Image (cartoon, rainbow, N blue to C red):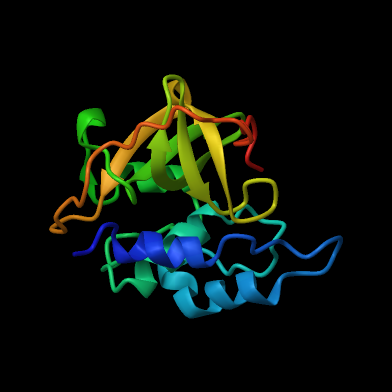
Length: 171
């Protein structure tokens, strides 16, 4: 029996992927952009210094054969707030797409669990890498799931948060 959606499994496989230091660019991240193309990303993406959380989410969904035809600007985090189907807080499950507000932009990643005050998010461009971090629930502006795909699982409550960093700005 499948315990998590294929896109979350694809995301977990990318944990630790990092931006290249300085003016260089990560061949892996730019490869994701080439595979998705301008039609999905909404821009010609050519530098890992450009926020890539949306690129990461789109890459994982595409690897799981999720239809991204309705997504026009995947690189823009807040564009994910209107994609797919709305998911109530009490229906969250691992793999849910969470969209967050942040100063001068947004952030998007995958739900892996939660504690009383934070969602635990597997996302790209969190500390310039693919990581799991805690993001304040009050910053979350949307909870989404791919249309037509059954929700697998239920909310995951985590009580031991020692060592899981709190993110305050995902740029």
